[in-house]
Amino acid sequence: MKKLMQLEFRRLLRAKSFYICLAISLAMVLITGVTTKVILATIESEEALSAFGYDVNPPSALSTMKGIGASSLLMVLAAFITLFVTEDYQGNTIKNIYAKGYSNDLVFFSKYLSTLVSCVFIVLATALFAFFSGLALFGEVGHTGHFFAGSIVAILFVLIAYVTIYFMVAICIRKVGGALAISLVGPVVLALILMLLDSISSKVTVSDYWLDGILTNLSEQDVSGKTLILAFTMGFNMLAGSLLIGFFVNRKKDR
Image (cartoon, rainbow, N blue to C red; front, top):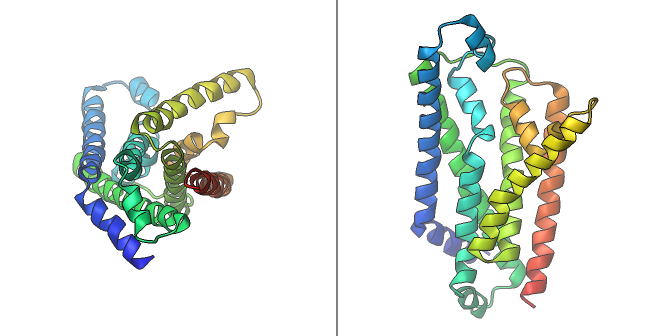
């Protein structure tokens, strides 16, 4: 397992997609921050500030950092995971790994762990960059609000759940085009369905119970205990379910 992990991490360090996706993630944070700064500079009335929500929660370093979960970061992670995981299958080099005597299960978990570590690195690097760029742009650290530490951990956990979902799709499809289409288009279709359900239901906001809605709620300054419980519960269910599906489908395909 150790040698297999070393092989995966060497492949990761040589992967151009890793550095490109990391750069795109950082660039998107900066573009979003600059855009927000420009909007603030052009707003003159209190009504306009209220419309953007800046009268209650003005942009700051902490709000910029917490907002990465509800930004384009998910698309970047989906693209990187798809390219990284499917590479061995697209080039048929996976046979060389099996030829060295490694089992299907070991290959699966080594790929998952290397993908997880690389994505956590991208998330943490993006979060740190978001904090310091937010501080430079807005000049305020900001307020932590309720359950700040818990919300940060919850955001990371939900993002890890998303990483596992994208990994499951990539390991099951094994084709860049198909896996990328599902990982990028799937969430959009699901968001439209949830929006429709929200319009039908007057008592329950259905979208708040899906990972996207949870990430949006976690990005707020004040987070409720209910949101934290929901984040860890849904995150765990999606993580475990996706990992199991990917594990058994991968095992069946390589028989």
